[in-house]
Length: 635
Image (cartoon, rainbow, N blue to C red; front, side):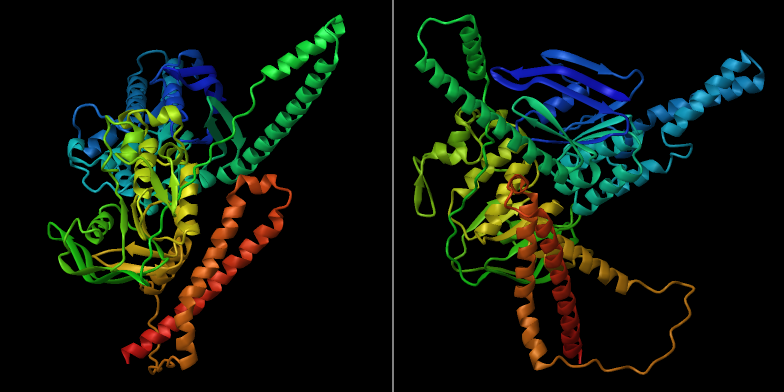
């Protein structure tokens, strides 16, 4: 049953048409993902469906009695409640239903009123309570805030950071259990662990429908039952999550290309016929001319403008960065304790951890914006750092995109080639009219692209990116992934995007607890597996388990010479094996692969499975030899 239906939606801002004759229907229990380029109109569509913004034309209908709640990118609260009070407002429907049930029960006990009407009212109130989550709700507010990483539940929202405010607003919507939750970029400011919790919650506990605007491709793939793409003023619907969307989009684009080729062939034939015919026309000939004119008037499908990122990679030594006994703290709280870390040329290190653990503080210490409390940061003698911070600093809102990126430069040099600034900006998806637009009028994703264009115009050999995946569309994320991998750039990337880390990272730096920061080889999936194994081995035995019989201590075998040599080569072997996994994953994630008859998808999938098995084998061997090495050192 439809919750909301929109027909022939039209919305324009000046001459820019965001939505033109778009149709959307959302049904009960559907989990719908929304994708599209920055500025394509995803948030505009969401706001229209939520009833916050009116379309210029079109029809919008909503099921009577249905509840719709919208998570804005900039949340708003009535007054200045505490986090707990703000989330509790999401239980208003539950409180109302409980009060209805209690009133009907009192009336029945007193014997006042119509018995059948009171019984019907009590039944309806009971159903409303169950729909809102059941009878016990008092514990859910604290639990929801805890799961979303909001620790200061008694703090007023005005004192919370922007990220904390968004998490409070998200908790308020989830706890209300609406018939349709419209979530605009819910994963921004959430760490990877919290995103995994949200993923499980939407799959297992949220019974209503969801409209999910997000760049998190794992979340889309695992949660969405249908995917909407907003492009060129239209809305296209595809069955399934992100991977199925890629396959179906490739088929749609291939079909559109065949239709356009047939139209062009038809027009060529008709134009040749017109040139050969005399001026006098019969009625039949006039009809043929009209068909040709109609075919000529059809607008060709727009070719997607690919985002192409490049960087001028400067030469560097083998060791780009070295941290020796690094210690960082804030207001007496230890963030990093005694960290030794060597970043070598070509390494792409993903940095993960809960919000507030010190990831950004570490980056600021590396680039020299903050002095360490202990230890030292040694940057390679030839290192040239390009730093992309969370706030996208350096952008002037009143200046145009063109002026922000080029400044007083009349040309841009990349890889020894001189590029005209307007051509350079077109590579980042900024057409001529967009280049003249003030940065202050852009969406969050477009601002991020401007900052990225500004960053990559400089020569660098160490790229440091702090939450680059926030707000960027999928096309730009794919281009950034390709840039880091194809150019073999040395990079340190703080991100919660698991898909991004699995494709890019060659190692993971994990902020754990009590200032402990651990360096793991491999991508995010490898890190998760290693961490789970470590936690399992460290877990205490069950309380009722019988004590293990005493055994004479066995001396572990020493690491042989050949094993020591093998251990030295394993990190490179693991990196190569994971690069193969990334390469095959990119092939399967590229829509062109499904349109290209030369690509054997079944064989590629089998090769990917084999590559993953090889990664597991090498990792198991690395763990075995590393354990023996530690035992040798302990003796």
